[in-house]
Length: 311
Image (cartoon, rainbow, N blue to C red):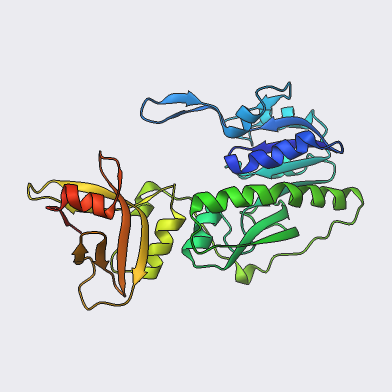
């Protein structure tokens, strides 16, 4: 099949490479987000999808908005059989959805209709889900609302982070897509409407979403710490004897039984930082003070034992 690949994020790269290696499919063009400044030095950086294609001659389109008439016209000229979308970052308009001969397919990193939206991987961990997976979906103009072609499940491990689950799902996506394309080529691809009443939403995350609310349940906070690693990260604030407020990033923690204390109270500060929550307590085991390196709780205590949490 003649395939146009549309994607931006790292999670789509293994699928793109599988398409490039497949003898049954030809990637005739790719669409990705424009290069953008990244990091403190604001160095211009290409998307992972563009980087993956740097040694090929495949045309790469980078429109500011894919709904622009000029972008739609360029895509139309490729006469694709299928458009494959993975973590692109824009909703495709009807003018693009109607271009391929067969369908626009989206690879979504959840078991739809659960966790529609931009951050399904983090949402699944934060919600305490036992399973997630990859959904191959026929695209429509809604936000992850199209009919389902197939779903492949994956168990969420107790120590999974947003990063580790992202990497495992990225490996699950290529065979899921190739199998779906085989079904489509045989005219045997199913269409299963989503049950909208079961839908949940996972909106785009901002850095502020990582602020810890100590009034929450300890298990909820621990899941959030894993879910938001590496992005957007979780943090709280501490203040020293000088009154200066500093941000403290939290990388690893474990919940403890309920302790009678006001949420946010430090119950222990030695080999671990034990903090009371709305229900239970949380043992902080790996942290990073603003402007300092990442430390175990014991290392943190030796260097910063005069600091106290501030909420």
